[in-house]
Length: 187
Image (cartoon, rainbow, N blue to C red; front, side):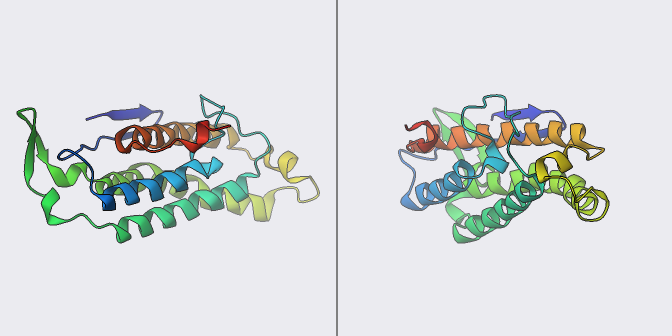
């Protein structure tokens, strides 16, 4: 399976096609997740920013809220499209054992990125940044100038860039595996 490592984060982004085609429920789950990824700059960065390092114009407090909302929306998607028992049996593809299919279900991927990427990032930065923003920062400055004074900005942005790169890789994998139209590439 494909393991993506970026900075402090690592996640197995693999999921397999179990049979000739994905079922409609799988495709719907993939599209709903893709829609959340493709429409949230806080999660995947700006479309033309290949390195996921361009935070220009963003107000971090609002972007952190969007990231937290994405966490909630991912949970809803996972709840709407449960792993069914047909994914529990081990499978063989081209004679190669794939292990328990449940690990390769899109719901398991959602769980992994929530557990291994989003939650650790939010636990590290959301409360600390928000406390600084609301109680310590200079409220007389415009938001973009004000946020530059955050004492841990470099570390937060570095980890956030890593998070975005991983989430973009997941977005790209969804497009490829489920043959989705990549709306981020449309004119």
